[in-house]
Length: 296
Image (cartoon, rainbow, N blue to C red; front, side, top):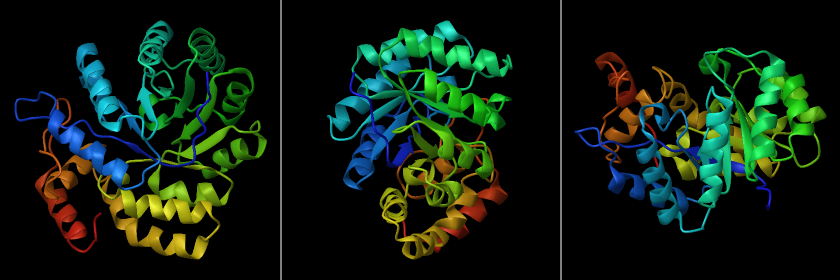
């Protein structure tokens, strides 16, 4: 296995739906092409932003293969395969490996609230079972459990296929601790757009982004400038995009980003229950915000 080296901006892709809530593959293909043409470093499918929890196994495979066909080897594709069942996570990662995807994103097991030892064993089991690059995903606001810096470092040291972490704890001090003590070539990516710049300034490697669904060139340029050490230019672009970063979470993700992309004519604004369309007051905030921004 060639381990994936992740650096830059990776877009957590939305899954567009038609009015009957079937997957809108035409819009998906157009969005993927826009990502590639905009110079994004890679895409993540079937994550939180992609409403993976509402897709059945057949739909997940169809989405994976649609993206793979459209990308056609031009950029890496990371597939969300996490579960609160270790065996299910192994099976999903094995399926991604079977179809030759570049890596998998494995969220911290949710709902059953494992201990730190249980979390370590979960990642270790998947790493030992499946020969594919793996990215751990720490998002305590969704999983209910924080993967501590100590546990993430233990995973990085002992789980041979875990090459990176998507750190969405919102805790910059924790991110710094991981960056400082991580093994060589282990990648720390911000899971929050607004913290991507301070993460990189602290030694991180990039971001898995929501914003880049509709502003891929603008945000990836900001991240590239930061990675080149051109922080004044990166900071200027960061604050040009700051209000967009904020409105992406005015309601639960991906409700706002789908509303924004619909306003921009990129997709239809449909979500599967239990997610619902954005409320009218927040939609007006979105319209006002994006009317002042240059979106590419």
